[in-house]
Image (cartoon, rainbow, N blue to C red):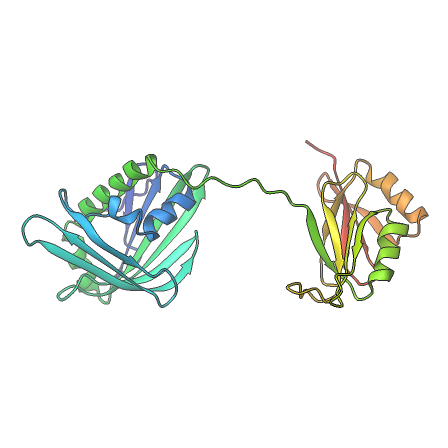
Length: 293
């Protein structure tokens, strides 16, 4: 009989019975969440660890990872031994959660399994909630050697994940933030004449659109004022809370007030100082100063 284990340490599987028709399994895996999610959902990973009893393999692994998409795994052992696992994905939220039905074929009840992935540093807590159609079906699963099979599966997952790396992350720089405006000329007057942004480019490609790029003093990131640019459909004046980090928020506020910018007061949110203002179209900005380390 499976007993409840309240521990949740790496390498330990915890089993709980939240209701008469459910089993919850929790295991912390020593691998990052994105990799663990991929190991559960990609055909290039799954057959390397979810193979069933010792000596078995998974020669067939078909996955259509989307709500309504199906999966099919065929496990084979010695001789003619074979098991087929099928189901349909109901929810897929990469890399947080999967909800899917699961069926092992005739004689086995269909279950609904919810698998959640929580990141804890470089480790991942995997919680699987298995919902059975009845208490009898749940209890039969508890007597079937389920715990031993899951323990072996998790051990295989951890051994496999230890030798697998995620694809490298490409270098990325945030350089341009689109700002939707109704009148580009009016916006340029505000950002250049009042705020003191530098005008980098002001181009009209000839299709009725206009691309105007400006950069705040000392910033590596710029903004682009736009109206009717293809692919950019944020309503005018709906951009909220762009941050301009300053060394001295009170001095910066005084200087901008002297240039004609209407700013609010300085708010102290526990050592982080903010001062709000808006452009003529209603897009909002915040001066920010962090005063504690």
